[in-house]
Length: 489
Image (cartoon, rainbow, N blue to C red; front, side, top):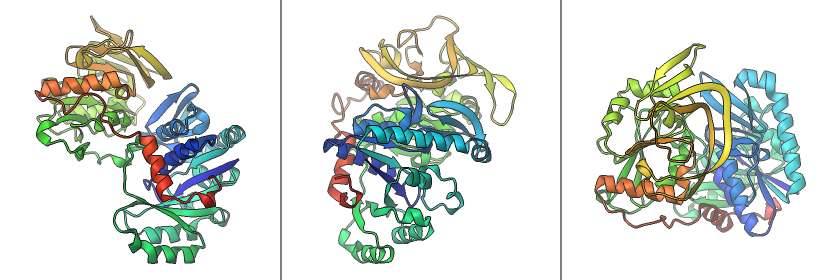
């Protein structure tokens, strides 16, 4: 059994993409492969039969063609503001902790969980593709770096170091990382991959030669800049709060033939990967907009999930978003926290930074009220869809997952879009179902209804025809990375 640790010189250098591509490539070649990340920090989580895992390991498990389990991500930290994170161990939320409290009170438990999870994976698979976190050269954390240093140690891993050339200084970051990592980890680095390259590779030759001479380690590949379409792990890829960014506007469809789905950029946004299937639809632009922005150019609105629904609701209200949403005439969908905001009231809500329980008015667009409790729902679900509201015309079965605290009950007559779950009116729909738009029927119907509301004919029916993102990631690795020194070919 071989473990390959895909580590990085920094955050957002492409570790998740390389790991997913490696998982699918090895699976295509007949290897029994599983993903692993000892410790993840992300509010983009997915539900497995055993509890929550980070989205990247869920995606990598699918790339590897194995069922996602909590062993793939035994420790998950979900930031909740005020310097605290919810600590999830083996799929279960165990505490809300500061960084200091995590290391003082929970470190031994987290380390033991990670070691045990990797041992189980190593027993059952030929190859484990482990993903590091951030930079492997954080010298202030080397005695407690679970995802990098500790994983390299207890997994006896071959390390593949990933460096991003787009941000500049790639050769300095590679050499600097070699200088700063612990010697035991340095000895495990089998090779380097440079990602996000644009241009003529021959121009890199002198730099690559110098890096190999200084480090004694080969540069195994230069991967061109390409987005295979995998879900993002965290909000680094999103625009900062207060700024606007548009996704999906590079599909070649003219602007006057496209529609815009506005998504308020919540300060505590979570599970924004729910929107990515819409980004891949031809003619659909997903615009992350500041809460204070106008909705005049929007054809539909989707309220995403939130790690703290009440505080994000109050931030939207302070910016006047509630008034603009009430006046909006197109389709509106609320997912999880966004669904809770669309209701009439939220009770037992705790404001960030206080211990006070509050009753807060929602936006009042759906006849439901939400009551919070300490009970957390984490489950994969399958439901029969009822084509109502923004999903009018959809039918069949939809799959997804729920991760939420709080239960929403009706305050009057309510139309349920999914049997006993959710609520809808003619133009507004709310649901706890994450991954709603991964379901073809729901996605195609929402897109079709958004084009109809805008008075525009869609470019074409059905899926966008984009290649499978797992296969695209696998092709990137196969075409541009020499796997020989890793011992997994």
